[in-house]
Length: 256
Image (cartoon, rainbow, N blue to C red; front, side, top):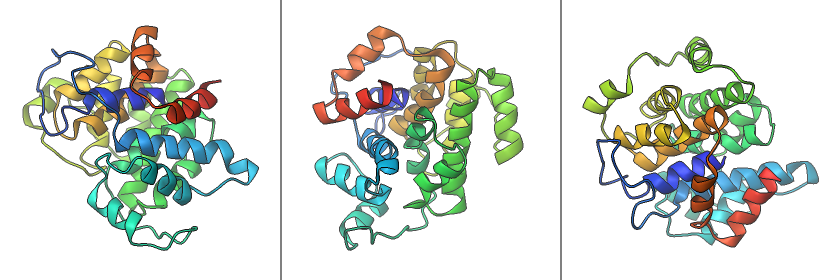
């Protein structure tokens, strides 16, 4: 989960100013957490408290999004946030955007069901089959990495189960890739960036270097790279300095 947050922070300044190179300051000037972190924390909050009779995920998404209202939420999500009755009456809107994939990591970090809980984490908003598929594919990659599966096996599992083509190289993707907010145009590329890295930092650099929706690509990549490589303490400590106390509180509960 923290890997997703770090990817979001590092990529935050490149979302609309792509940097097609791996040579950049890792935590650049004006980095901050965005909606990707807020929604990842919302899923974690839901997972931490659901067995205690806590609020549902729609409630948590609303709670955290309204707590941090200026974090570049997508247009469809903003309509969902502002146009529905509260107290569990929000309805999914059939999205296949990459928001479902970037927020799924707490499901696996907290040992949830990487298929069913990933589906639940997505369908509260992203009820389109591609939105659910994207979340489940990322969850499977994280789950397999936590179990110690090597990148080659993870790639084969994802391709066999979800049909994503993961054969292209990072260098090749960098040549043509452009902004894409869909799961089908983000998830395969992010997985490739993680599985073809040499370290956690290298995975994030891969993700930023291909361009596109940089903070979300890097968030998805980081969530997969974390259990493959783990996060160096200096990067972990620096990332935590960007977070507010309430978000740190959720992170601490997840990793305690």
